[in-house]
Image 1: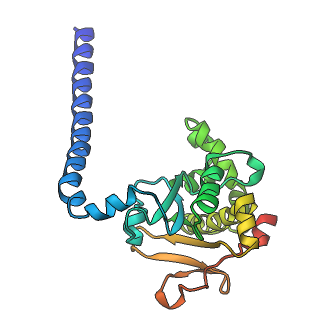
Image 2 (image 1 turned 45 degrees about the vertical axis):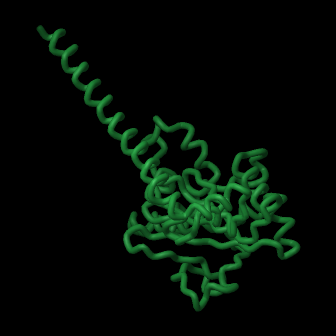
Image 3 (image 1 turned 30 degrees about the vertical axis):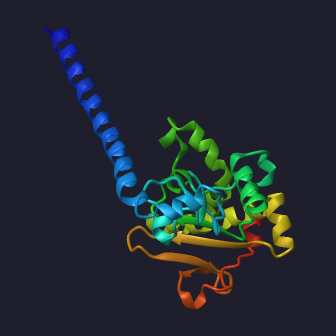
Length: 248
């Protein structure tokens, strides 16, 4: 009787799971149809233009978090942003060897001629929280933990300088400092270093807040993240990241 009950229960769970997956895929498929019918039809000239090649205005490096939609939060059109995403918006330094991130960035600046690179972190970042946590808490995510080693200086900085902060503020500080660390790593890549030397690229450090919809940008003059506004959006955020961070 017990074994029969278990088989029936497992079967029921399997059916529920299968139904859920079908509903998810149905939603995706319906979305593609709605796009073709309502969006593509009204913006056909744009998509026909894009079919002839891409000329993005900026390289946007951000987290894989599903809550971030780069084109939506910047209100840019398809084709305007060349997007690179991964857990924690991390850019491994040149010492990491050949990586997909380095290849994507090299293509953006050398082949596509992108002149602005934005590294955009975000509030409540799970990757940075995992970086601060006891590794034992995430023992089932060994690849993630290995990946987060590229941001290891952040954990060391928080443990040394900000260990008395409340946990929420500690996470916020770590997220901001991670953006600066990745800007430093970005400069170690040959393609970016060469463009920086000739004034051919500008670097920007941003931080998006889910809770408020606000975008913050790093100001070298104030050495902090401040509101992005049209009044200061010119050359203020052309960042030479803090060398002291790399030394730390």
